[in-house]
Image (tube, rainbow, N blue to C red; front, side):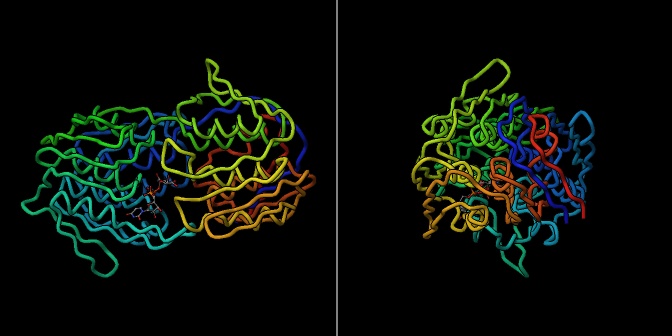
Length: 421
Ligand code: UD1
């Protein structure tokens, strides 16, 4: 297992290109199952999660080529030869559940393994299941697999009301509804930019969708979808992560391709902490202005502060002047980075869904362990600002969601290297 070695060495400045969004790509890829014509994604990121989704789609009979230099992913699902998403792939990546809606909508049946738990919480898929049932599917749980069938071979448009906001369940419902007979209305839909991106792609494939980006999405089902080429939206979580580099270390970083509308609530918190953020023609420019001030953070569905930036924000607040409280409202067990940051000299108390961070003047390098994707990058951010050397182990988590992280940080002057093995 690889580790990452970081030597904290003061202010970092430069430009960092922001990749296409992992989470958008993971929902755009299963959309290929909705059509027998090719779907091409440009600006796709090169990440291990994308390789896992590639493997899943190939196991269903799709042809997937790409991830070469041009970051183009070309997919074709002329025939869906296998209708079972196997446990061995699904357990590696929860986003695998996103093949359920498209496969059921196009083929009238699908079998998808339940993903099981994951490090940051129970993360059930009941809302995905209920959405498919609202569209007329009959679903049975057998041997850990959801066996779904649309009576008569086709889903029927309906009103789907989500009791809580779910990104993945909204995506599954949206994809399924494009080929259902009649009109579907999704109420209390997620409003994340990745949903807007998915709707744009589906529309380019011939779907009739209105209201994406609001809480109510209306879909008029069509008989078939065709091929399309779609550029993946910029990764707002990668963007927010690199915006934190000058905030933590000092210096000035321009995140190329960054847009304020993708990170509104997060940028507001950074500014409240005393960091300057400006939109330029090419992206977002962030300047560190010395030690930041404490701020309180509550994670919420978009447009609120994203849970996927909570760990990284905590790394910043570890050296803030004063005490900050972070409240995690999306996932019940998402403070596993706190004890690791404590090993680096942070002063953090966790009580249930709240973490209280008493800012210290300086963090110190240590050996720490990545526990999940966003936790792993929070440790790297902390290490960049710490005195001395930090070794972050289990960085395979990092490779799921950040491409070329060492290269991007080195370009800004960071001392960071990967230790193989
Ligand atoms: C997506 C993102 C993930 C992000 C999360 C919240 C992808 C691939 N992943 O995950 O990075 O952290 O949104 O912004 O896009 N829930 C249920 N039942 C369900 C589904 C969800 O109770 O059937 C709960 C979850 O446990 C969680 C909350 O709803 O507490 C929100 O989860 P959801 O928005 O569905 O997250 P994902 O789509 O899995």
